[in-house]
Image 1 (tube, rainbow, N blue to C red):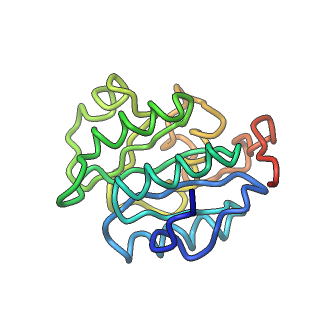
Image 2: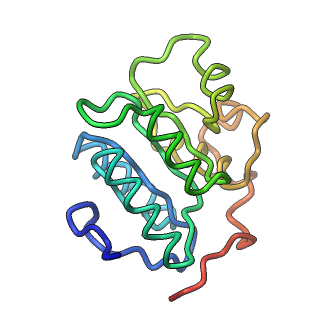
Length: 168
């Protein structure tokens, strides 16, 4: 299977912790990629759920994995965010998926966790909260609220290579 060229600007090397971002808004993808890249994450982007499923299948076929995924729940047309979550977890059940939307209500965090999301990230969010949430997902620290860190990530565990990606 060829990597879908319309989806990302560069083929992930999976040489470090690689995050998959799924959002239909090019500006959100660009800013999220820039923020996470500045913190040492490798980032792959998909503009639809279908493209994300293709990217994940490609990674798995290559013997690679994404460390975490950020999934916009409200993308017009195509698969719903919930359908995408189900398909992603069918391919990689251990992938921590963070739900992202500008339309969350107070009880959304527990509801999303109950259906399989690792956590929720409300839009708009700060760069610090984005990075902290991704680090928590990679480290799989479920109970420590991201807000308690006030944007400081020095005390959070960094990706330790336990699920390191082998180069092809």
